[in-house]
Image (tube, rainbow, N blue to C red):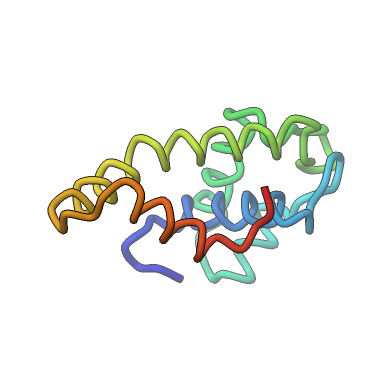
Length: 120
């Protein structure tokens, strides 16, 4: 676990990563707050906070007495949130550093193309 990130957020991020990687898909049941509590040795309320964050975002839904499950829109919501976060928080610093190093736009694009292994 990353001690700089609150535990409840680590739980949320873990589930998000499971969804993005397709290890959890629509209508899959996620571990309960008690299961997270035992496996991560944390307070059940902390685990519940992480799960409820995802419910509030529309990533999970609750079935009374059965648990929490992945929504149909979950992956789209997560990808859109992370793209927005990337654009607002990571990209400006990346571009500022490139400008300080006098890397031209063409050089930067070539660096990205050569290191980007996903086909467009």
